View (tube, rainbow, N blue to C red):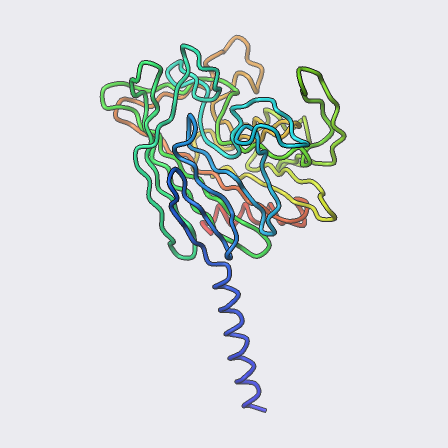
Length: 329
């Protein structure tokens, strides 16, 4: 009996080790991007040279389901909305940096670009880790700000975690002002099937989409009412092919302005924005209420976590996962 128990424990240990190994992360540099695999499957790629700013595309659930919109990386995909071409999958930027726009892609006189200067990747403690540095450049090629970004991706039971940490740095000789605008900042553009019922544009015509998705925040506020509210987390989930898929975003308690405001829309834009106070709170007489100035030579750091899960916010234990994030897990 003792021999059988020892054999069972040994077998269980081997199986558990194999299961853990199967979830190991892998990073593979490939030209203008870095591929991240979790459990032998593609999770995402960090694209750092192919657009006006770095972004992550595609972004896949554990079973391979696409959790992002393809446009504008792919121009024509059936069943997609083609609005807001600057919504590139998963990205960080802001619409007012010293009066320049790093959010939109209009190509106008105030259009900024985020240019990668260096990038590295590794696997650390079972997580894929990317470290990148970029400069925020105006149309006159002047550098208005730099950033150091750290991205960590790992698998957990039933889901995927993506931690995004960005440190924004002002040049030694001038301050940087992150202006008050709703156009920002840490964002993902989800696929159309994840949305609640809403209208969107097709060939300049408004079309109604009968969606089955739900947006909910930590206070239980749902759908369009979550826009502009402050909350520690927001979850976006919907059914597809007999399953329910969800994406939650967590605002770290160390972030300035925590809990953040949310620029989250029923048409599938999902963004945390700590700078858009006058838009979100309708402070028309205080257009600079949410502006944040980094002094010359100074810096500010923001941290967010994306949690890709199965089920709604309760089945996916979003509140519990947020507490784990707060606890440093």
